[in-house]
Length: 604
Figure: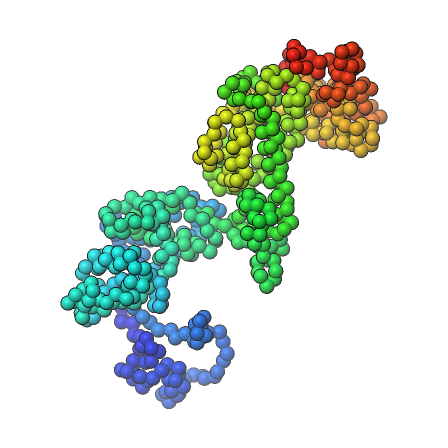
């Protein structure tokens, strides 16, 4: 198929070429009225009127832009390479091997590559990266030593800066041939510049561009991350240059994020006054709060930020930080090498929290691998607030503070706390990097130079399904505790009790739930943080002083304990005051006094 030569009668100075009939040598703006008159003269003018409309202007000089056809340099999308494939085909193959987050980015980039024309990479600007070509003045062909000349130009630019090309006289490189060749002044499309950054970033700044050009095995980045507009920009040009140079995409994954807006969804603007400056946030709240806010957003869409949103983020941060502080504070005197208890010998409740951490870590690893930082944020916060703060840590305080320092009860608990905080520091390290470093430095034992040099913690064991105290059992107990907590709070508000440890609780339960809770025996009162717990049949529940719960198989009655409070453990027990040598302590605390025999309990 033959193409007609493209006629371009407008010269670079905005004047029609001299050989143009009727209007040659005239400035195009001055020629416009004459063109209209000529059309009217020959009967080719249908209508003529002046209208006001939008027209391209130079942003700097504010003058109207003249459109003209010029010779350009292109990257051919459908020219077969040595491997028999076109650049378009290789790029489309690269898209198929790339992970897209969110997934809709794949279809968008695929459509752009499949339907795009050849890539025009030259620009006529007074600034930019030059295209260091010499063209024959008669034939218009490239100099036969173009690659060698480009390498020489690159060396000069590396030594003298980008202006070296513009200062260069052709004779300096071409010698006697200089008169036959023209040094072009075109510059590269800026997307070509950014699209080739993978060469320098992944190979190093001193990579020789023309070393082994036949090799197509260049390195690949794990991830390119940018805003949604970059499917047309950086993601796009990087894919084309990577496939052209190495035969494959320069990345394994593309992550697309939205843009920051205020709480009302408006674009941030200084004139509106809704800008939240990152530096001000860091100065006021710290860098980790800003990082945590980013992790807490659904970045696939627009990301809202305001002082109120950051305040809520700071509350979540304090929960994570204070939980970590509690874990570390209760490791006083613990040496993992010496004191750690094997998982099978640990107390059932301690096994449960380690198992819970193991389950969470598996989900976190998957979430990080899929760049679902919001899931990491939510799950770590829930673990700190629900499993730890709302359940486990409250229960183990009694053991930590009342049992003997080297007892199984305390060492088992400390082992669990140690395992959890080792894991927690690693979970939050990619998000709360400074806080994670602090946590890591205070964990007992030898440390690496940084938590960022660690991998996920590998000492989290799991419970066997079907065991006496398996996951299903503890889920039941957790739900019961939440229901009882509400009843205790109601009793406190009604002035029936002052605290949970001042209460005796009767649980009216179904036969199945009674069997489950009965496995804990006397330990049930420690789990529920009351001084006494009685189990009774659901059918025996009267209507007086019995509170229904969200569970159909559980009703709760709360009364104030009639017994005195032990000044050491704060439990109200019938034997307080019956020991002459320690009239204000219960028998359990007397046994656990320093030098005492300690108690043998099957702690749940």
